[in-house]
Length: 424
Image: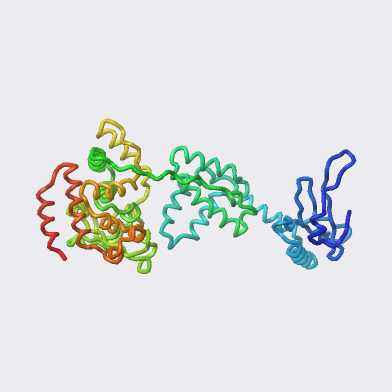
């Protein structure tokens, strides 16, 4: 076997050896300065640093421990690692046995074990964490949960993402975004030796959606929500009446609502964690009389989450309810609605406010807390103004508009409109 001081030059020159039959075999270069330190050139073209040792004297079995490939390790880094390993061996430790024990533990850890540990240790102050948990528990764990974490390859993850993309392209992208940091976290903690999806590309972003519910769809949506179980009927109706994000309405708390004034306040990220608004800024939402009437009719104590089934956490399980709602809308209309997403309600509000009611886009942006859009549009003084008066008027008009679409204006709503106009 060749011997020489292991340097970048000698490693670059090292090649696999040729056998008499024309095949190639591993070739080892043994360092002349550090006994047991070597570099191996393989027929596959790789060059790998290793340490060879023997415990128990001449009767002991010769063993080797891989340090890592040339490229990821420089010669100097490999030499320092080999000195560490040889020091452990001199102290009576067995690195090969330790690695076998690590591999045994890795083989015993299932994806579900690791995912649950990951979920329990992360995300307490992360606004998107409930959705991450849902994606892992609903989609990833049923598919991969019983498999050994160490045995899961890139192909299995890709197959799960592709299967999800067939029914929900946006969901597939979100699922990949939830799984990718889990594998990185597991690798950082040496739960797995290699991250199979470290350089894997996620699904491409879907084309920008432009769907806006038409008048017939809005009416069918409103009527159909009445057949949903608590608390999804009022929840969905307030999504349409307020134009706010799904997570914001789902996390609505009674402490932020001043019902007699028809105002809902969402705190800033400095004041409340997890973050309540997408941009982390304080935001005020004006309820129309129709929205106030929905809240005023809700049962239970007016404390904590408005929409909850546990009393401790906001509602979830939106996908299953959406399937039910689509079926109800199909029955109401006599035909299936055009494919739509919950976020389309928010787009519907902003579009119809502008197109049908002629409301200033700057006011709509403030209603939906689109401060970044305002700055991008360079709207000058609007960047600093809250536009509270115009926003309140716009929400009053929107509530009346929705009511006319559904079944006409009620006397109670008209009376409350007059009262609300005089509030400061």
